[in-house]
Image 1 (tube, rainbow, N blue to C red):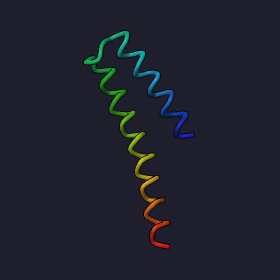
Image 2 (cartoon, helix red, strand yellow; image 1 turned 120 degrees about the vertical axis):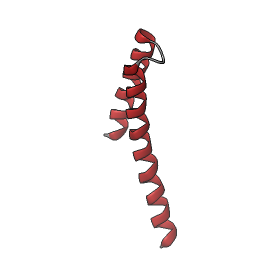
Image 3 (cartoon, helix red, strand yellow; image 1 turned 90 degrees about the vertical axis):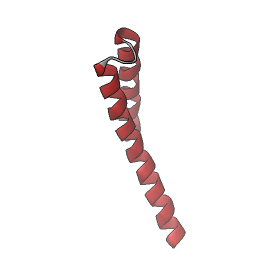
Image 4 (cartoon, rainbow, N blue to C red; image 1 turned 120 degrees about the horizontal axis):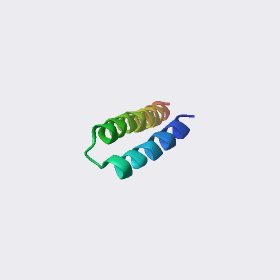
Length: 55
């Protein structure tokens, strides 16, 4: 589910960048939101790895 949200956000960011430019407020905001989503995945993966290592 989260991967689908990330893909949609990435596509939207690419659209904004091509339409408004890389430094436009919409593009930057979308990029920051995408970063947060990706960080959620990385944090979740990291926690799972750490939990397995402790077993």
